[in-house]
Length: 532
Image (cartoon, rainbow, N blue to C red):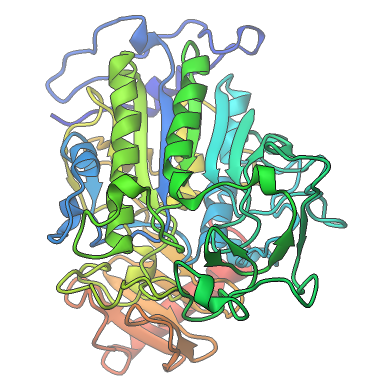
């Protein structure tokens, strides 16, 4: 049976501002296709909890419910088996920072300068006062948290992060009540946790310094001390060494605050369950931002060697374990049927992304991008078409959907779910696809979608129905074959994704009228400054 939920039904979720999440005159009784109503229980009269699980660099073909054979992901598969698995689910960019920016702001990152991959000392890319996905939930009386990788900068535009003082603005200034962060990304310095506004466990007598130049001639790096590394670098990741792994950028001090790479996933789960436990008496929104399977791929010892794919495959299994732990907690505390879970990824796959970790050598027959071309860093399908699953027991009927949905749409869709209105001057590209996300009969996804790479090149993809326009403004793309060497391309190509999901046959010469219309449509959406 498909879950039917009218706009009027969702509009009943109007939290009373004077009493937190307590609902005034609430009757959330959604109609099923067979015509009967959900039971009128206390659980049904409370707005649903929402958990967004964002994987890092996970490809469409990297999980077994999407066809992977070399590894098994039973917990992610269970989400799909009990919910909706989207064949045409997208993130908005093929690199992490712009996808995360768009997910939270509902605005294409290419519209905003400075939203490319954030360096270690980046200031906050989302400034205070910007409406976000988190602030939508917070305004509705939800408790909100982000736990895991941030990579959206901290601190003011003038100074950037003050690692030894208050790290603000940050997540708490844009709608999150609580944050426990990997501040950048783990191949960049520093390897410390940020809890709310401060570096956790920082010893003031051992201050933390972060920079982009070598602090002293004798500072050990991946170049000068390569023989000491437990994971060798292949390109670019050869500055400061921590835990036997050299990184991008330099830092000194903060030794008591530094973490062990192997413990990241356990820490995210521990912190998430602790926070849910403290806040489960009222509706909550959790952004669980995993670092698996981003480089450096260093899973906990209990996951090392469990797959034939090397550390990359082992980290996928570790990610799957994280999903299982979250779901198991919800079941233990009878929160499962009150919680909508969305599982997705920030971009597609890459093999050699700076470390020699056997990702290429042990690939075998595994196809991280599934049937699609490309991956991380480019705008071919595998760069942005990734696993996307929605699960809400008792509300979402199991199935597979070919509707087009994107992480940028979470803001508009969840706003309707909880009865919030979006301001007209924000969330400029977030489209309400709630009916598609929860499987409402006849629910439609997006009509069209723009995707980008890092946002600095002008490379974009534009999909309308079966047609996909690929614009390589700089006439080249990297990681097209899951490696990094750039390859030349014409500025515009046209593909029929129904007949050619692998984007191998450019049809621009055969369909010049379609090509012209797609170019005009993409340009119009760029020039309009918004699509909502």
